[in-house]
Image (cartoon, rainbow, N blue to C red):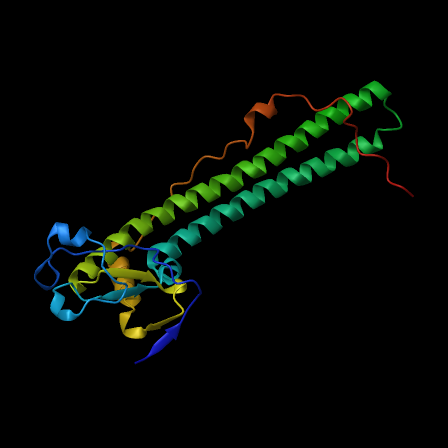
Length: 228
């Protein structure tokens, strides 16, 4: 046998399939009974043989055509947002420098007012950045959820064909026979059924709109003079 090592903690993460027609079928009442002992029942008892499948979900989300397309769209939108934010930051830096040059000519009240206005702009930009980040996260999560829905349907169909009653995620297994791994078969079908996927980008919203209308604290000041 060929064996592969994967992650730790053997947990069943994808699905547990108990197919009704395995080895002639089992009555509902018998299927619900608790086995009298932990040892596996002999083949003559009529219980279905244990059939296992292993799927590398992370590899599918990394290598499938639809997943690659989603990553490309997310990165393009991220670069677009980064360019926009960088321009806004440069505008604020210029305004800050101009305000610092005016400190010696403005009255204390005027300086405080301009300082509050500038701080509000900084707060607005911070909310803008957080809103865009959350928008990307939601858009990416929704796209991956669509891929996973198709993936799970494919895995379920393969499990029924193979009469598998246990499906494990590869990263959660310490040791397994490579013959149980159906990742390549799932990948092929996934690329056939979902070759492309367009991300539905969620419109960015401020992370805390309620605070946007609140004025900055009266203590907010313009940036202090640079020390010589």
